[in-house]
Image (cartoon, rainbow, N blue to C red; front, top):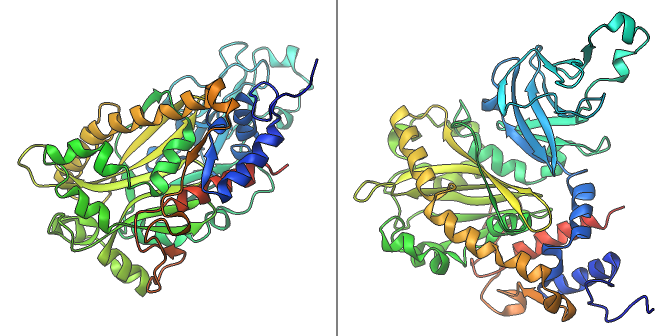
Length: 451
């Protein structure tokens, strides 16, 4: 029996061979379809990306009081994100140290302790082991310090966004984010009261690979005039071609970046971040650097992606025919559920100091277009379903099929970089490029090949 056949054969090609081909393909502006539906690649992602990178786990407004908790995921592992009795935010693996049963089964709540249903081991909301039935007879010599719930070694936050890393040797969160910190501080820090999420995150499962969502939000505006043309047809997004044609990328490195929209476009005739005066009057621009203030006075951050799987979207949306557009924003997370599926988590978000009527209108607009039943959402999820189908195709893999990410590659468009951008990173001259997506896959490759 031969140990190898054709190099691209799905049954015989080694993971190392595939990853070598990914590296060569990225240089050519392409990405092999294999990485979108391969169990071996998925296992590497869980271990080397989700096991080491800083991953978003929630918003501070979800757990404002001691004892508040929500259930969250890093990769496919479930954790309890909790503010303990001393106010410290912790991330605890939801698995009893006795036999592995989940010690918490409600999606959210407030608790001083978590009790395992199997043998009733009890843990404080800090994760510390706190007792068991008949302890004097059963566990008189047990050391509680050795049997606490497993806890993420690194938990930190920035502008209300809570992240965790499972790697004890991880860099600090701000080191990990790099230049992205400058933009988060500018956009999410403009309200002195910060941001708040509205209600529980929406969650739904789609037959798509998690990387497709992250890639889309880091820089793909090219799809909007075709895939989302219907939102212009119904009057929700007027002059879509003019808006998209004026947008540009900001690449901040490390597989992270954003799409920006400049001012002066056919959008609401309002002020900063497409918000009306009753909202912007609460903003504090004097706390920003001059370059940050200049940027947000003339540009709106439409989307961003923080590696590996957190994204953001903001836009003015007409929630009801004939009504004025309302600015909305939301956090998105692309949760892996096997190599060919993901759960999309969506947190509608508002400026905390904004009037209640604006918050309600913003929420309605976001739910209408970006939610499990949202009109734009249905477009995206249908399109993203193609990648895992191709990734699992024996014919496609045998022929070493790749996806084309050559938009703007090697002079194919007028895509270049501006010389007048005052912020960190590189701002592009055009939206017609996929350099940011290629940078994202370069970061992905760096992480999955790192021992």
